[in-house]
Amino acid sequence: MTRRDSSSTEEPHPPLPVVLDGAQLTVDQLTALAREPVVIEPDPAALDHARRSWETAVRIAERQPIYGRTTGVGGNRDTSVSDGVDQDLRLLRSHATGSGPALPDHVVRAAMIIRVNQILNGGSGLHPDIVTALIDAVAADEQPTVHARGAIGTGDLSAFSEIALGLMGEAPLRDGRFVTRWTAHQGDALPLISTNAMTVALAASATDSVANWLEHSLIVGVLSLLATRSSVEPFAARVQAARRHLGQEEVAGRVRELLAGHRVQAARVQDSYGFRALPQILGATWQALQRLRGTLAIEMNSSSENPLISVEDDAVFHNGNFHGMPIALAVDEAKLALSSAALLSQCRLANLSDPVVTGLRPFLADGPAGSSGTMLLEYTTSAAIAEIRMAAAPGSLGHTVISRGTEDHASFASQAATQLTDILAQSRIVLACELISAVRALGQQNHGLDTTTELGAYLDRARACLDPRTTDRPLSDDLKAAVKFLEQMPNPEKDTTR
Image (tube, rainbow, N blue to C red):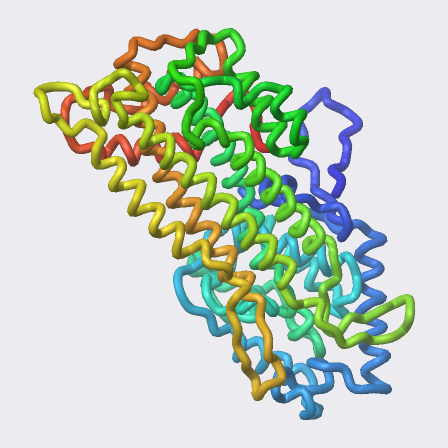
């Protein structure tokens, strides 16, 4: 993906269009584009390829059957259809059957951008005016209402049928308006909806937030290390060189960077896994996240079409490229990795509650003997971890046989992507509990950090959003504030997304 350059900077200019070519869209670019309405233009060569794909599909359909174009779909695959675009309209209307809450605008916008890019990759056989309709809707902030449930990891059929009806003016947009931007052509219905673009959009949005959470988790873990008087030996470069996992080395190096210039005095010869295995666990999570992002990038820049229309071969290939198993497995791995990282935060919280480890009172209490302090944060984390454990079950283990036996396997990639989002929400709660405790412990230890350093500035911002009182009181508002803090970038001065 490229952004056009301006030849002059003397006067302000409107934002330049983003050019999609079907081959270079990245996860970072997608999440940035999807935050707000954006002006997009198709690369001329890519658009011409899409046009030739449509012409090829029309030509081939005159000489042989094409699934979904001259036949019914699913269990109706052997039924010939001959009523032109009416069959396409029936297909879109019947398949626009979703359930659950409406998806957020930025996810729907991301899915529409992905689908444009996939169509520009060639191979769909769609009439190219769908590209114009999609990019105009994105620019005009016209998001159709799309329900979160309905896909099973073999194409986001219901989601894109709902998008299609929104573009056709048959269904209301999120703001209640009816806007007509597109009219279906014969053969357009199945090629438009046979895509995993919505699942990819969900997962891509989650990876952006998971990367942010991982950076917060690392920094909060370092604050807890200081509060628990833990050793820095596990983060030594020599230790990492002995094993050479890239993610592990990255995390340990980041810890050393954060601690540079700060005094660390270890109270024990060896600490719990919450600190000692931090590079290994967060590093493995970081690597799993990178693998997921790589898988999503492939999906965004591919022609995962069934049937695939080959301009080069003047042929149609019926296939299973729509199957979401690569996505499901990559998301499932990220889910399990994030779950372990959240468990590590719970381990550190237990250390922060232990007077033997911190040198402070049990549960960081303040006030009369027997005060409970942060005791209920352990309950809160345990409840969140229970939710994480249930959501971490692999979505790819699901199975179903539908459509009269013609579709006898599913990846449930969309369910896995939703579960990843759920795990992330609970992981923020777990980390919020640790953050509250680490900030309180450092305060009770009178452990001041130079606010001109990244670690000191982070601690200063965290303290500013939390209630400084340490006597027994409800901590619900602190939790809410800490979660909101963790949703933001760890360092507002720079992008810390890995």
